[in-house]
Amino acid sequence: MTAAGAGVATVLAGCSGSPASEDTSTEGDGSSGDGTSGDGESTPEDTGTPMSGGTLQMLATGSIQTLDPINAKGSGAGYDQYGRSVMEFNNGLYPPEPALAESYEMSEDGLTYTFTLKEGVTFHDGSELTAEDVVYSYRRLAESANSQNRDDIIGETMTIDHEKDASLTDPPDEETLSDVVPQSLAIEATGDYTVEFTLASPFQYTLYQIAGGAFAVLPANAVGDIEGYDGEYEYNEFFSTANGGPTYSGLGPFQIDSWTKGSQIQLTAFDDYYGEGPELDGITYTVVSDGNTRLSRFANGNADILEGMPTASFNPDNVSIEEEMGNRSVGTYTLSGGTEVNYGEIPSLTTEYIVFNTLEVPLPVRRAFAYAMDQHAIAENVYKGQGKPAYHITPPAPYPTFEDGQSGEEAYDRHAENGYESNTEFGADGYPYGYGEKRLDDAKRVMEEAGYGEDNRYSLTATTISGRSGYRQVFTRLQSKLRSAYIDMEITEAEFGTIISQAISGDMEVFGLGDGMEYPGPQNFLRFLYGEDPSGQFTRWGAEGSHFTEEYRQTTLQAWEENYAAEGATQADRNEAFQTIEEMNWASVQELPFLHPAGQRFWHQDVNVEMYGVMENQTFNQVTLDG
Image (cartoon, rainbow, N blue to C red; front, side, top):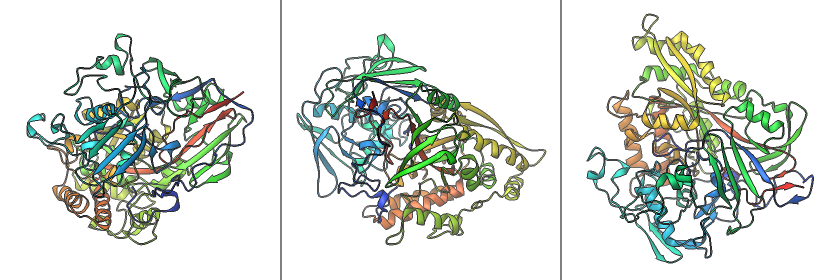
């Protein structure tokens, strides 16, 4: 599970508009977005006859927190199976395609989107989808006190027009996303099956954004947590296990059968699903937080698909790639016991990084971490080459470009190595803490300059996600190096959901996290790094009492407001803003990136599943098990 941006408003989880590489095309020309036509098979030849029926056994990495898509999107195992949005990434490929929509139109000014919904689409409770359900679901995302994802719909990137009232915030007059006036969101049902919304300003990734899990459509009036709806069910009755719940009703090919928190969720086929399939009788997600235990269960045949493998257990020599499909590679992998399974990998739009709570951790300490880290060594020795060393928060493929025909990865590498197209002193010579090297003398120096020494050491606790051996290895490697720079670090573990909860409340000093993009634009991640609403970010950078430099904050604010968000801003303006914010993250070390990982999947020979695309979302409605 990942978190799309280290902001309180986004609990899970860019294309620059410049010429895209073959594997990141976003043109609506039928391209799959991964360099294929979208109709290629990614699995080896079937070893038996595909048959309908059977239950797919899956593993969840952490406890399932909630079924509410606006509260913690992506944290519930199997979300893509029981939820559905107006648009979708079919098998994780982009550009997005209509899902609940039959068709859509955009006004010439890029502000108004009109969707015609498919008729006869049935919720799990038997009711029919109408435009009013979409209005209700989008309003909940923007207005409900339960929403942790308001930034997706009324934030600084995609913003559906709405009214604000500062008296609604807590405390009053504080500018936050909770100042939206109820029922002011510019969305309406213009017919039984047509819905229209208007943006405050054009946003190039609107269709990508609304394909995300936070925009899943629920029956209108399911719960009464926004004005104008009393609610048919109590909140925890609908989304959780209170009063015999959940009574959740979605639009996916599978419906919730039973749910034991912290243990297992069982889904059964929904016979009235509007799309193709489902072919399976059901899917069972069993929570197994330990990575080695997940691997063991998979190897023993007690799980059908394994999403990723503990880094210490993965052996690159056991991989045999048989087919390349754009940026997807598929073949086989031989487990340690000799069993051969199917294997797929893809460079993901993901960044693994360390988050610093700047209310707690001073800048010299954060910089010492950066000097002590060697990203190249981590990629090679910890992750065994299954990923790219990370020096920016934005992944390589969608990194902003500055020349015709330039790939994002080329611009990424040149900027990190030598300061190509830099905008600030911190980017003039490239990554300032050592590109492909650790600089322990500088780590020690920056701490001594701040008054630390053997008689005045700094102590802190780092939290890593349970069962993620790579994160723990990264912290362990840093732990020994930081001792020479007068920093004593304790390492503890917590489940993903717990880490997110503690990050929201600001109860951690340092923790590891991974971000997966919801759309391939740098603003997807960088919106959390420019200091506009520090109270709403995991880093709290710029908040009262935090360790921040006002000059850096003003530089990022100016880049965002005068380059990215200014009226009439060009793509070149936006690219300049993105580059500046990346450099100011180097200066401020709010988030310290270390890897852009490859997505990996392992599946047994009797499972017929396609390797997912770069967006990683995938619905199992067409998956079969060999008879």
